[in-house]
Image (cartoon, rainbow, N blue to C red; front, side, top):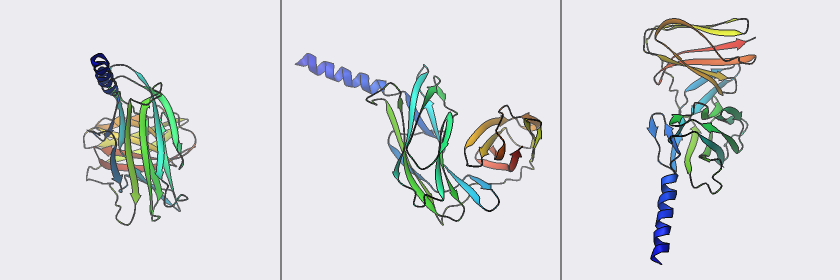
Length: 250
């Protein structure tokens, strides 16, 4: 009987120790399992002529906390459907970006001891059309059928009359423009600040590229070959947006 009890305890300890493959972060802060939070302000604003699309960013990041590459499965489960399903849609990215107010499952590898740059989740709404949705995000080892090694975060996106823009324009005297030569898209910039982050979004609000722009003056050739269409690029200095520009790839 004692042997069975000891074996049972050892099994629970091993299982508990094993369930440490992943960690969700919000910004730079690690999150406890099963944490819930609400996002009500928007960080990205895209003027598309007749409409303006606002992006409520979860700011969720996914990290592999083990010393080896792992195959991960991530899911999006809608707990409460959008209050206005025609004027708001979820964006869910893990290497591949998808949009739509449906449950999603994607799989891919995450390198040892690293954040996955391809993981990005947010909710896009139309300016002036209030909306909300509640979503559960999960990650687990792809071959873990029982999902003993799983992390869960629940996010409520709420756009209402109290939502405000988190876009800030400090007096950093930025110079920033986009130009295209053939298929090559490049960015000409000059910032009187620290290194800045360049983020590029598609017309549907999917983040399609992210790069570091070193401080000072320079020209950055975009390594990605983006399909023809309308894009919005933002440049951030920490959490402050110092430049935004819409551009068209012809």
